[in-house]
Amino acid sequence: MPLSQIVIQKFMMLMNSTKPFLPSSLATFLTLLTLFIFMPPARAANQFPPGKMPFQGFLTDAANPPVPLGNTSPANKIVIFKVYKSATGAAAADVLWAESQVVTVDKGHFSVLLGAGSAVTGFTDKHLTDLSSVFVGDNASDRWIGLTVDDAEITPRIQFFAAPYAQLARAANSLVGPTGQTTLNLANGKLEGTAELTLNPGPLTVTGNATVSGSATLGSATVTGNATMGSATVTGNATVTALYVGDLATVNGLLSLGGALGNTKLAVYDGGVVKYGLGVGANQFRLHTGSLSDRFSFLNAPDGTEVMTIKGDGRVGIGTTDPRGALDVRGSLGANSWTYLGGATLGIYSLPTVTAPAWP
Image (tube, rainbow, N blue to C red):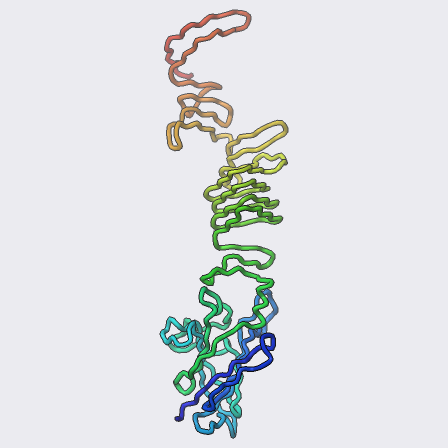
């Protein structure tokens, strides 16, 4: 047969075994030595593992006895490399990564760097220069590489096994979920997350700032910087210097905003310069609007009628949202008590309904 054929010999890492696995069949035409170690391209060092991978092998023809390719002079072969999620699956969905390379074979030997080749027609979306994302997911234990030479894939495929860079798990930069999605990432001194964070029981202690784009459920939390969350549920105690919640905050225990004084300790609305909230002064509990023209409103339901108003200048209105005096009551007045005016005593047992005159 003119087709080059490959039979695989697995390379056993010294950390696992000192005895290599030898093929048992005398019909072996090729021994392919594979060393699965992620190697860095020429680039500045960073905190992430390298994504390219060296791959060495030995190619022969199908003659008996086999003759190494490039036996008399180096020969170039177009080889397509594919990483599959199964040993035999041939559907496009089984291919996780693919690329093509022109491989120079010298007396049977060749060496390539996976991730340094070109995209394969029909699999352009499967070509990555960084292979690290190929080895994640809920089925990451099954990763197989197949080689196509002379337009036919050589069997069997080779399964990937653990490599020295698996030791990176001892100081992981990212926490990856079962589907391969990064849920927590540590980079540039920041811990960032895209999934829901649940700590129950806590505590969670953050000495810098904490930002959660989704929801956070904590047994207890202490943040000495600022905390920004889409929504937050704290079943224990929470101590935060500044808390920003975009949606809903639920605290079943104690929510502490610290012991320092401040004009706005809790902002129920933060428009930047304009804030509505609660503060603490010296021997003073502060409740404030955003400006003098704003008002405090008391409603009879969440979206009900405003029954009492306190303007920013101190005027109080009952039955009106625009009081014209220090106290403006629109409606009926009734009293049944003793009222003392100066040194005189006035007994009032009933007061008829009085219509307030028009304000000047």
